[in-house]
Length: 448
Image (cartoon, rainbow, N blue to C red):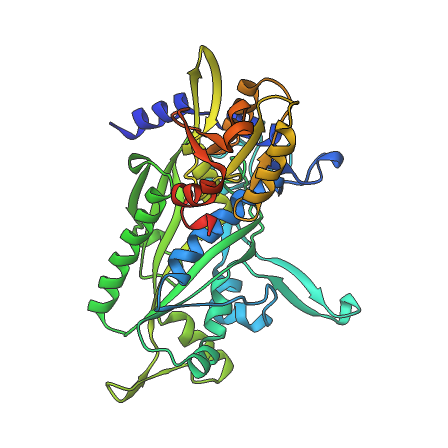
């Protein structure tokens, strides 16, 4: 299948408009400051979006940090000393070429415009000029005497600046990684496609320090490319919606000697999902030079000091959420009724289980509330008693809840309930006392 055929098939499966409408209608993602008309490409996450985002981060953290003995966690500050960004090269190199329309005053990335005319109004464009992507602000009581600081454009530099602290306090041995999740900010010229490209976003980055040897670099580079691709598939992305693309020499970042993008097939075509880069010792070299600190590692086995090289997998939380939502979205027919169903991996689903009394009488609501309270100590749990049972099932299918527990007449006699599966719609009967164990097995670590 060609790229064009694949993109056409993808658009037929789910459009961005359908997903955006679902996110607004069900409290997943809202435009920021919507009552004031919004604020360019910034978004707020509603109750369900907050849970989904938390689960994506936890899935990453568990497999990148918690389950490994060779990766440490860190939480560095959003504000770094201004010299951090001089040393890292962001002040000089973190730019995009931009053009402005002399007629309608709109601004565009030069590399996204074909020809000398404005794509909106056909007006004349200005010559391209470089535009730094970092947000600037001031630290101090009076702006004209305060220090200029920047909102970080990536979380990585907090890791490099703490390299010596980590080596001195954690008794680490190469190879080892340092991971963190946190907010980053980029003053993007062109924002587009919902939460695909925004100015405020959350990153999940890991710097994996290795011996400065070509063989070690290539081994770990390939390892992390495959590890990260496998992670996406295991948590819900279709393998044929994911591909690996090596950067050409002329598109490498200033710090990279090699980068592979894991690209995802969005409704608008293939686009970057995650990047895995060879950063070499660039960052440690630059910060050592700028700070006057050594920032080297003493290799006990080799009895020598050197600055390690680095492999960096970097993934945006928001972009990962978008991909997981797109691949989860489905429309089918159940009992002659059309439904929208989000087929999330249960570990990512915002709500793990919903509880329903079949009837609003006969003690069923009281029993259902007691079951909900029991399950809520272990899982994110919803309760719904409004409308027909079929309609309630559809409401939960639409937000991806994988399991539903129904309290019915038999429950009142023998303390058993039906457990409904979102994808197959099949129902099995279990004792109430066995529900936690059964659901733990079906959901996995997210229920622990």
